View: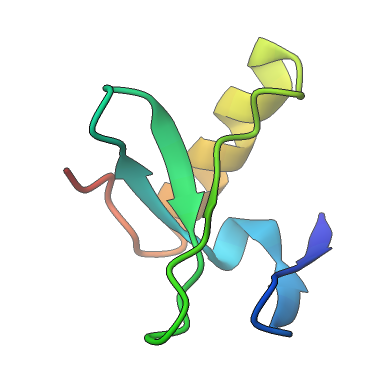
Length: 65
């Protein structure tokens, strides 16, 4: 799934870094050093959201705190 970020980065959403937010939810962080924008993907069905997080982790980004 391609997406655009507020920093003008465009790429696969799976290329974002999976993180755990302060309130314990999972999100994907923009990999641009000066950005860090988070996408929580709450608008997706649970199965689809889980698949995207699993794909991001396979891209070499283990979920970070």
